[in-house]
Image 1 (tube, helix red, strand yellow):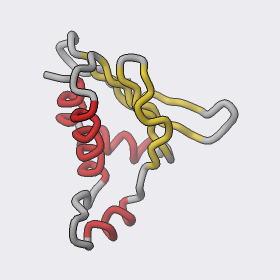
Image 2 (cartoon, rainbow, N blue to C red):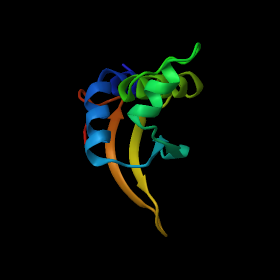
Image 3 (tube, one colour):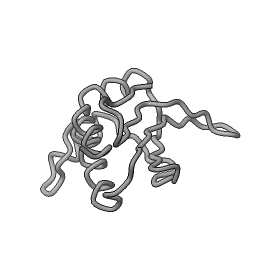
Image 4 (cartoon, one colour):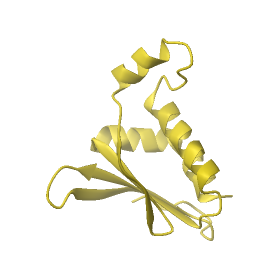
Length: 111
């Protein structure tokens, strides 16, 4: 199972953690390479509003996370480790681990 699939399988838990911790943005790092520097986390209200329009497919934070992770999986299918970090404004920005998944590990490590 790829790290992307491991994180997608944990989407409900990831969404709950993102809600609880409340980062305004997420950083996605795969094999030590930043794929998304500061991906803005939409509010539940914004997601519900956008889902009402044709072509919008993410009515919840969980669905949005799955959509973003699946998109990244297509672009970077062979990675061995994926980390999601919460990002807050500052100089330097404050970073907090949200989740990490590895190919070789039997379970996904949650920070």
